[in-house]
Structures are given as C-alpha cells and as structure tokens.
Length: 469
Image (tube, rainbow, N blue to C red; front, top):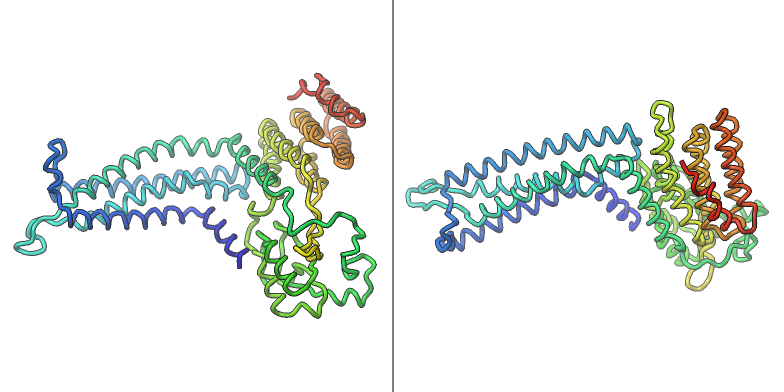
C-alpha cells in the first residue's frame, strides 16, 4: 500500500491538472469567505477613505465580467503555449522527458492562477444585486472587499504572466534541461548511497547466511523450497518499498531474493521475487510481499537512477545523430554524466545482502555495481561519441574526471576497460587527423591510469586537462 501511495504522490506531482484544481477550489472558498465578510460588515468602512470609492452594482458586474473573460482567454493561450513547448521538447529531447515539463511547478501555478482568478470573479459576480432585484424592498448588495481582492488577483495574474513569458523559453533551453536532469541525478546519488535495506552483513559471495536454496550448487530438493511471488500487473516497476519487504520477511521468518529492480519491465506472471522456505510463505506473506511493488505504464525517476542516466544518454545520442549534429549539447550531457559518476566513485555501494535488527539475513537485493553504472552512462554513449572528434575528446575527459575521484583499483580497471573500448571504436569510425587526435587522447588517458600516481598525472598534464574541446 505504501508503494502505491508513493507512486500516486509522484503521479500527482507530475500531473498538469492537480495544482490548478487545488488553486481553483481555494479561489472558490476565498470568494465565499469574502462575500460572507461583506454581507456582515457592509461597505461603511469605505466611507472614511476618500480615495477609495464604493462600486455600484453595474460597475461591479462590468469589472468582474471583464476580469473573468480575460482570465479564461489568457488561460487558454497559456495552455496552448505550454502544449507547443511540450511538443518541441518531445521532438528535440525525446518523449521520455515529457514528464519533466508536465511536472514543472511554474507552468502549473501559472495556469492555476488564471483559472483561480476566473473562478473567483465568477463566484463573486453572481452575488451582486441591484436594488429591488430580489424584491421590491430588497437593498442593493455589492461585495466591496471581494472586489478589492479580485483586483489584487488581477495584479498577481499580470505578474505571473510576465514570469511565464520568461519561464517557458528558459525551460526548453537545452542547457537548462540537461542541468535539471543532472542535478536530480547527483541529488539521488547523494541521498541514496550509502542507503541500506536493514544492515549490510558483508559482500562475501560465500556468505554462510545465504540459504543453500539460493546458491548456484543448489539441489533440486533445495530449489523446490523456493516460492515464487508473481506479478499481477503489466508495466514498469516504478517503486519497490524496501521497508515493506523487510518487515514482511521478518514477520514470516523468510529470506527473499529480488528478481527485478526499479525500472525493469514485468508482465503478468513474472517472478518478482523468490521466498524461502516455501512452507512459511503462505497467502498472507505473498500478498504482503506483492504489495511492496508499484507497477506503472512508464519509467520514473522516483527510485530509478538508470532512468535519469538514460535521459542524459538519450539527449546526447540525439544531438550526435547525423540529422542534428550538435556535439556541444552532447558535451554538456557528458559533463553531467562525468560529474554524477565522479560522485558515485567516492561512495560505497550497498551490499546486496540485507539483514534485520537481529542481524538475520532477510533480503538478497538486486546487485548494484559501479561497473553497471559506468556501462549505462559511458558504454551506451561510446558508439555515438566515438564517431565525432569534439564529443570524443570530451568523452575521454569525462572518464579522466571520474578517475580523479576513484581510489579503488577495481573501479580504475573499469575505467581503463571503457577507455580501451572507446579507443577501438574511434579507430574504426574516424579518419585522418580526427582519428589521430582522439586516439592520442585515449592513449594519454590510458598511460596516466596505468601509473601508480595516476591522479597527479591527470592533474599535472596540461596537454590533457587543457586540451578539451
């Protein structure tokens, strides 16, 4: 249930209707409140303000009608401009970035302000009465305080319109789009690592706490003691509630092994996880474990770092396509990918073995490795960047920046393998001077990484650091 609520919260945050709806309801309540105050306090308080004249019924109706008509017109124009920006972004950056624009709080508040002003004006307008309109002796009623609030809302709407005119082109600027994705990626890395489901007992592959049923040499009898928990939905796994998994495993005294991670596609019947032993995994346990998964029609960045990396890779790949040929946009993506991977290189990734408070193994999570993230970021872009001199040089520079943050020999070996693979691709795709420049830069990086003092070599080599594109 918690996973579904978190997914619902994320969907509402990325919806284009939720904030305007809340603002419209607030405007309706505000109008009712102002009319109530006016009906009890009257407009005699305005007599002591010679610079402020009480409006008459005809003038008040004309004013509110003008405000309401103009606001709904501006709201329609605003919506049209937003849709045009979304269509442009979809073609320029890819359809997966649509949610980034739909969830933009500035666009939502802008539309909500115009709709709220319209609803407020319409609600107050219907309360205005001329003398004798409700009866021969009925006095006129004009909610003067509500009219003043309507004028304040108009001024706010004008300010919001000016903001919107500036905000839309800034939002679709490629550097700003890339910056927002990169910032969120780094924030997620900062908040997630190290993050554990329970406590990490250690990374030994032969950890004695791992049940024999989950080992490679498990017998058929041991394998039969594993109970699969299958998905009842079709779509992408948007969220896995680690706390629910750990609590259910502890309550039923189970050890579970995840078969999927956030961002993977599961269909009806897919095995989400396996639980051991089978005799303790009844219907209640299966239901509780299944509730930890939230499945939707699309991938989200709610718990999927790979999705944010894929967004940057997609923008860079589109920029390097022959039809666009924009290596400098690709360079911006490489800069942010390098910054994110450098941040990741300084952190300890969590063990895939998780224990509860009593140090009993409960969850065998899907392994998260530095190699996997590097391949997702740089490996996916290598085929595109290796065919361009400008992007190729920045690709190698980004690898060097990541290496400056690495102290682990295994992670340095991963970067060396990536640089070697990129050098091979560049040799086959580039010709002449362009090939010589990129291959020479790759050789320089490989020589630096092979030295024990590779950080000093990367920092001190002016030809390396100063020769960026």
